[in-house]
Length: 100
Image (tube, rainbow, N blue to C red):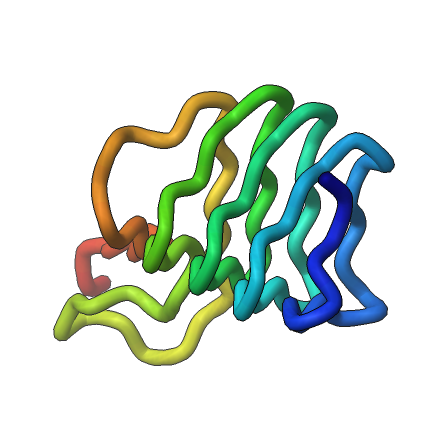
């Protein structure tokens, strides 16, 4: 299928040549997507995100958005997944460290 012309793929994204991207999907700068993965219409992948091979990213899925955690203060975070869980939103992880 390739990349739909209505999708927005950042020049900084790294997609294997066999990745399919549906209409109105958005793929950000630091995203890497492995062979055979399908990104459905309206999906959004952003942040420092790495998706392995042969995954299916469903419609309206958001992966790699800023964490929805009150402890998040803008630090660098990432998502690395070989097989994403079936959920509509996967946010980057916040690592909390005890105060000194």
